[in-house]
Image (cartoon, rainbow, N blue to C red; front, side, top):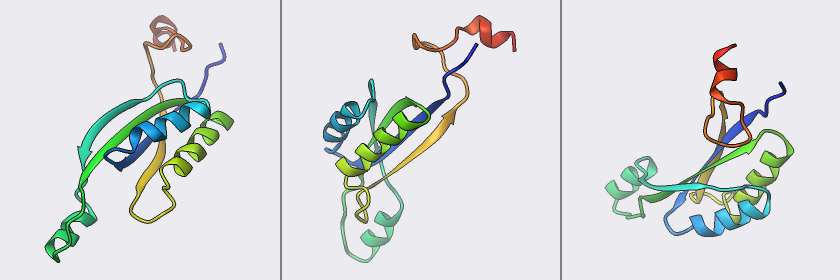
Length: 115
């Protein structure tokens, strides 16, 4: 059975930007997204120490996508919508997904067990 190769696209941006980014991602082919909140600790600690305060509140967006052209279009849309190429605006990366259950387009558990 041919299987779809799935990637998890992870987007981390300042709080308040997720809705705009998800809207653009869906126009590019994403079927959904999950958002949760976090707090960054990298450069912010250094800047706070020298007297500059920056917002550490983050939104983390997770999007599952088929690897390939669809994934590329979604990531390009996300980078544009979040202005990710500008310094300090966020980060986007993808990770391979090796096992996935619960979505209608994936193989079922029995098929995976037989490998």
